[in-house]
Length: 443
Image (cartoon, rainbow, N blue to C red):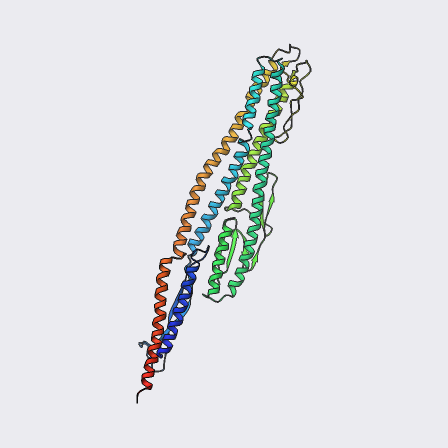
């Protein structure tokens, strides 16, 4: 016999106890986010002797060879990739929805339609004071709707940039923690409990980073990770124990420009990319709305300049401003509307007709409707993409959970099996003791 029964029983009891501890840890952390199931790897202990030959079976018990994480790097990478895509689509849809609300619910389109309708009504009696007053009031209301829409769009942009900067702060915080985990992993004993806990932390931090930006990861032999963002090959965010700072600056059009360690970088997915895409749409919407406001002001004021007001004086501008935020009605009363052409009777609506014709050509209502349609179409299309990407990300998480998660039924079986193994080892020790007692009692 290669070893005594007491030694064999002792090693069996030690291995069973270690397996029971790991099983209990699995059960305790079954609901913990980011926890990966552990299992004890056991190995036979063989003792050799001078008289032993290769074919001999000469065992001396069992030893704990290490604690293994039931992790799959490919599935984890898929969870990060699909999660980043879903986060980008989700944040973009949220931003586009806020843009749509800012333009639609402020009533810009309705304000333009009512202003044009008041001009149409004024044709019936160009000298009617109430109809003239209605034109200036509807114009004032229209200008205010443009102001509110511009203010609302500015608020949406401010919110998106605030959230993006908060995301940048989060990326830097998580990257710093990941760098510290790398340092501890480099010193951890292979397949130890400390190492497996650090690997859980590493993978959890990587998943948190992927919610904000795309990641390219490289795992070293010592299990430390190098992380780059911005596509392939990307710019390095974490390398060993060093984390480069991510920063965001606001461009002239309101979008964000990102730098990593001073080098330009463009996140391809994640919440940061989604917010920047929404900011790009916001910039286009604001530009189009400003163009409608500026053209409307220029069209009305140009028509005013070719006519005369109710008192026969040369027409003066009705509106001021060159964009949606600055648009304002500056006429003090309805008499300022230049309905007639110079040298004609004040009842002559020729100049008013020219104004309506110019507005019809410029078509501010149609252009505003096009802006609303473009945003609504973008929201609808991105929502379909978001739902599809969210479904893919959910499936990836389910697959990872099925492979790396804790199955309580299986753990209950393991608990019983290792408990019985512990009891059996104790019984081996007891039998060995009984045999020795019997031998010692022989006379």
